[in-house]
Length: 143
Image (cartoon, rainbow, N blue to C red; front, side):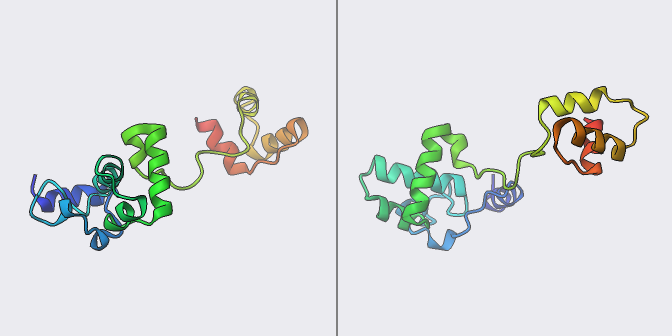
C-alpha cells in the first residue's frame, strides 16, 4: 500500500494524528515507510512501547510522539482496559437516547398503533413521569 493510499484510508477512518509534525521519535524519521507519523494508532502504540520496553520516561515518550504526559496516561489506561481497541478514539457524543429504558420501550411498542406520538408522549408522562419529545417516540416506534 502506498503512503498516499494509507493516508487516504487513515483520513477516511478519522485516524490521522492531529500533531504528526510533533512526532520526532526516531522510528518515524521517514527512513522506514512502515512507520508513519500520521498514523495515530501506530504512534500511540509506539509511544507506549517506548516507555515500557525502551525505558523512556513518560514525559519523554509522550513528547517525542506528539502527545502530552496527561494524554499518555489516557492512552495507557485505554490500552490496559481494551487492548489495541483502546488505541482507537472513542466515538464522540452520547450513545443513544437518555430517557428510553427497556420498560418505556416496551410500553411504546405495546401501545395502540393508532395513537399519535403526542398522545403516546402524554401517556408516557402519566405512567412513568418521563417527558419524551414526539420525535423520540416516532424513532422508538421505528426500531
